[in-house]
Image 1 (tube, rainbow, N blue to C red):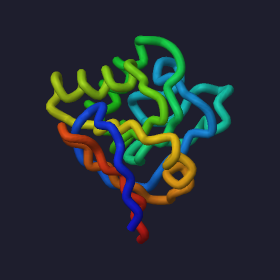
Image 2 (image 1 turned 135 degrees about the vertical axis):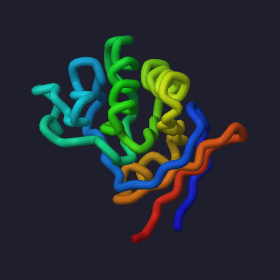
Image 3 (image 1 turned 60 degrees about the vertical axis):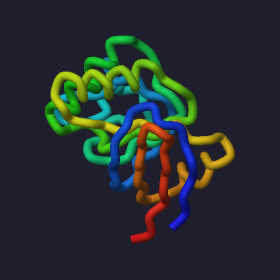
Length: 142
């Protein structure tokens, strides 16, 4: 098992199949919170579901309203199990924080280091353990 140190943006633990986005995605207008499906018709992964996966994305894209879509998906249990970012994204983190505060349901968010990105984004299955002292991202061999 390969492990990487990361920065905690939202605490929590998750393990699931990785879903690596080919390009940034806005949750607002890009994800159906009721199903977890990517509905942005111009996104290369349109029609696929991020529900229950560890979402691996360089950064989010777009509207500040995206945080409400992520929070609603967390409430409906259609959100990713966790999110790994390469660049800080306040909208994604706010959505995870709101879901935790309102619904008591966590969605850990970790910021990966650039030097680890190629290996993390090539993994099939990942785990996140994000705590107040930092995060650990693991590539899990099944």
